[in-house]
Each structure stands twice: as C-alpha cells, then as structure tokens.
Image (cartoon, rainbow, N blue to C red; front, side, top):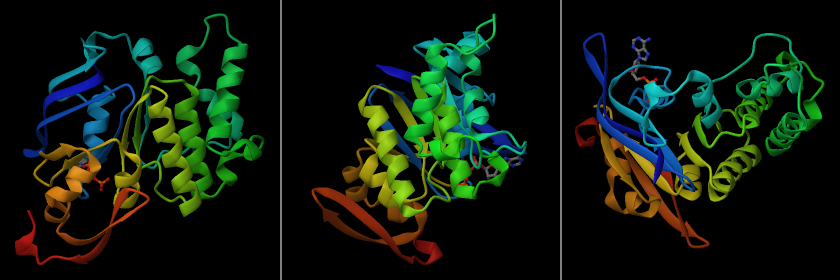
Length: 263
Ligand SMILES: Nc1ncnc2c1ncn2[C@@H]1O[C@H](COP(=O)(O)OP(=O)(O)OP(=O)(O)O)[C@@H](O)[C@H]1O
C-alpha cells in the first residue's frame, strides 16, 4: 500500500507545462529515486507531494486526500528536505535539529525524553553530533547540508521527501547519506529522494522514477530494468558506460549525445 501517492499531477508556470500528468507513489520500505534533467520538475513534484504547492490532480496521504489533513498532522507524517536547505541564523546545530521536533511540540512546552532521543539519533545518523554546539552558519556547505537532513529526520517522519540530500557532500558522506536513506526505508520508512548522481541512484534506490523535460514520467521501474531500457541515455542525452560490481549495476555518464539523438 502506498503511504503517499500523487496521481495525474499537472502544473504549469507562465503557460508552460512543468508537470504533465505525473503519477508517483511511495510505500513503506521503498526508497524511490526521483531523477531527470535539470528543470524536469523534480523539485516541483516534491513540493506538490509535500502539500507545499497546489497543482491539478490528486495527492493522497494514507489514502486520504492531502488537503483534508490538518497541517500539524501532515507535518508529523511527512519530513521534507528542500533543495539547498540552509539556515541563515547563527543558531547552534543542536537548536536547528531541535526545530525538526516542532510538529511534535507539546502545548505545555519543554522537551520530552522522546524529543531528546530523536534529536540525538538524527544528529548521530547524519554524523553531525560533533558540531552540536557550533553555530550552523560556521559550518562548511556539506556539513550544513547534513545538519538540515538531521533536522528533517528528527521529526521521525513515516515519509521522507529529500531533494538532493547528497549534493555538495564528499564521496564518504554521499555514501553515508544514501546508506542511511536506504536503511531507513528497509526499516519501514517511505523515502523519495531527488538525485543527480546515477551511480548512487542505481545502487541505493529500490525504484527509480525518471522525469523527462516534457514533465512526464519516462520510466518508473527497478534500477536494473531502467538501465536495460536505455531510457536514461535517451532522456539525459548521454552515452553511459555500464558495469556491475558485487551483483549491483552501475553506470557512468561518458559523453553527450548529439542533440537530435535526445528524447
Ligand atoms: N518560481 C518560478 N517561476 C518560473 N519558473 C519556475 C519557478 N520555479 C521553477 N520554475 C521552472 O520550473 C521548471 C521545473 O523546476 P524544478 O525546480 O522543479 O526542476 P528540477 O527538475 O528540480 O530541476 P534541477 O535538477 O535543476 O533542480 C524549471 O524549468 C524552472 O525554471
């Protein structure tokens, strides 16, 4: 059963279709990679699924229309990491991660044991515990990106929508974040993650949804099947070098195709 589903989503800006009849659903245990060229509408779709942007079509959370949910209940179910999320105030890292508990805030105030445990766990998962007392504005871009992911996870969401959580991270932390998201999915979370790195996407996602530049779903299938279909090369307009290691497929962008060969 899908926890969050988007059906026939249509969204236009300035008369130009950005999303043109898009379907995407995610269930517990899935880590769905949302991929596609720049401008294909990945962030737009994620915002629609988070209920932050209104579009034509239907979005359902636990099979109930998203607009029927109270904002606070929705925020407890869905964690959202926006693209390039940052914090411009000189708050400590621990304070920023604590803000992720806001949907669970008690009307009587104060942090409960469950809040403190969730905050500590999220900081540890994202490898930012050592920065707890530092001002978030003093961190490097990659360190700050991990703090913002920790904030999204501190809310203990059933569904995580993460827009490019691996952008700007070094290879060690890219792998760490993807192993974390895949592990959370394996533990029952429903994850949708926007990625540009095809190697990470193929390796760590259970399913890949490929949006094309016309704002349509070009493919929504298992990583190995997507690779076999040739759709990646066509939609991105690139030739891919394919290989396999330890039973998992990988692909490296190798050269651009002539524009007339693009999908
Ligand atoms: N506020 C806006 N006004 C006009 N056009 C916009 C606005 N926001 C987004 N767009 C356009 O909508 C399209 C989809 O944007 P979106 O950010 O969803 O793409 P994306 O697939 O996430 O791209 P990227 O991989 O570059 O992050 C783009 O062509 C973008 O220029």
